[in-house]
Image (cartoon, rainbow, N blue to C red; front, top):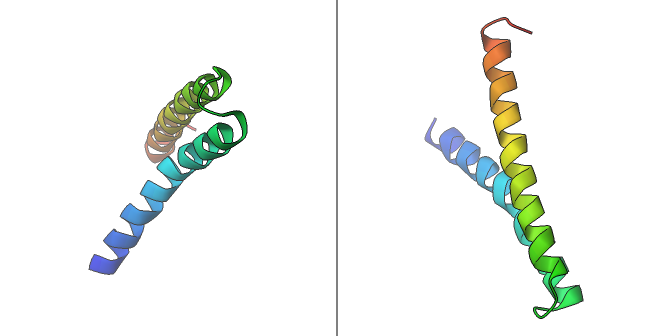
Length: 68
């Protein structure tokens, strides 16, 4: 049971933060720190992941309560 909780936490952390880390690394590696594009892309990815998480949570609640 303890390994399952650890696996779930690790799975959540990797799904939540790995895309941002990878996109940020690729953007800054290719475009550098002195241009504005990587910062804009990282902000847009943060917004997208936040919105995606909230939508997924609300869909889960609706399915649990039989609204969908």
